[in-house]
Amino acid sequence: MSFQNQTLAQLMDKVIQKNPAELEFHQAVEEVLLSLEPVLERHPEYIAAGIVERLVEPERIVMFRVSWVDDQNKVQVNRGFRVQFNSAIGPYKGGLRFHPSVNAGIIKFLGFEQIFKNSLTSLPMGGGKGGCDFDPKGKSDGEVMRFCQSFMTELQRHIGPDTDVPAGDIGVGAREIGFMYGQYKRLRNEFTGVLTGKGLTYGGSLVRTQATGYGLCYFTEEMLQAKGKSFNGSTVVISGSGNVAIYATEKAYQLGAKVVALSDSSGYIYDPQGVNLDTVVRIKEVERKRIKEYVQFHSHAEYHEGCSGIWNIPCDIALPCATQNELDGDAAKTLVANGCYAVAEGANMPSTPDAVEVFLQNKVLYGPAKAANAGGVATSGLEMSQNSMRYSWTFEEVDAKLKDIMVNIYKNASTVAKEYGYEDNLVVGANIAGFLKVANAMLAQGVAY
Ligand code: NDP
Ligand code: 2IT
Image 1: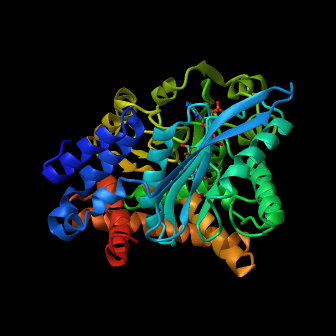
Image 2: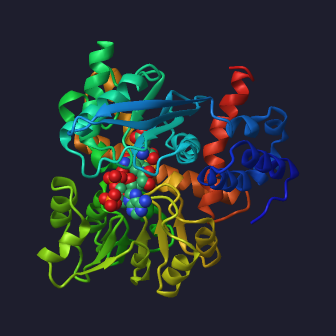
């Protein structure tokens, strides 16, 4: 796809010029701007008010040194980020990623996408994201604690329950959130809902742990049922074996599917009988080991080095749940050739633009990340509501609200796609639906808000 609208084409050039070398950010912006062409034709007032120009510029970026002392008493220095992208519809909201690959471009792409995702949830949350190039792998609990405390010592100046509410993402789970929450509370002397994904003993919400994976399957089931299909009886391939992948696997099984493959950043397992989730949870979550250990417990299963081969496994439904750009055009063609009819994204931007093109051209049911994985942040929004009320809902109550939100995101994205002449294109539908609410809030609030 290329730009027809000159204003948008020029804006895209400017984004590339002003943010050199931030390839993931360019990719995320280009996809959204292409989707917005039909909206701007209908609504020139958004151009007049500079809405899109303002949207691609973060309201604020904080970059900071994180120094900490390792178990050998050596000083370590990492680089932390928080991008506060857009607060038009609520306090900045989005996860923190701890991974050696983290840089400004990656955090900006994630923060930019979060604006539209959060808008789609229908809850009042702006877009933000943060993280650090710290690698939790191989670190002791003490090292992770000291790092998290140092990270929060700076971050706490920039966040707050009505300002900016971070959560988890890659490398940030219950352990890291606990350490960061403890440090925030120590420094600020406040017990507030400043982070989500908290433990259940100190203000966390039931279902938040499961929410992204469960929500992904609720969304996918809705997308399938609209075309007379369902998870029931299907074969599913899921990449990753972290928080999102594990709970997507659990829900896919509950909906009657068989999950035959999972991966980590070293390689993938293929278990034609269906992966045993208890084994995966023990290896990845409890022991923090590699997925290849799986074949020691299930000798009929196979382990293959390298991540991309997972897409060669024949399946009906593919759920990429590891990281950005993990599924390229060739992998998409292989999936299609093997009969895969649905792809929904648990990870953020896992499919390259070429892969997305292949899915759309071949009429694969395709659920883009902003819509399909919004269940995590939606349940974070529900955690914020419960914290404000000083109250907690039951598992069933939160799960029902999550399901309702995911079904509505599907309906909203597909209705808007049709309304703008792109029936069945959920990329365009989700981007436009997410954009409209934010754009109207920005219009209402004036330029120098
Ligand atoms: P986890 O840290 O729990 O798990 C990440 C998984 O992805 C691990 O299996 C990891 O393998 C694999 N992985 C990470 N980086 C790479 C890489 N560069 N190449 C190949 N595999 C990789 O993170 P989550 O499950 O929380 O996040 C997974 C994806 O879902 C991310 O894209 C995240 O942004 C997105 N997401 C997460 C949400 C949440 O609520 N947690 C909400 C919405 C989206 P290894 O163990 O080897 O590192
Ligand atoms: O990408 C995401 O939506 C997340 N990592 C979850 C963010 C959140 O605030 O719960």
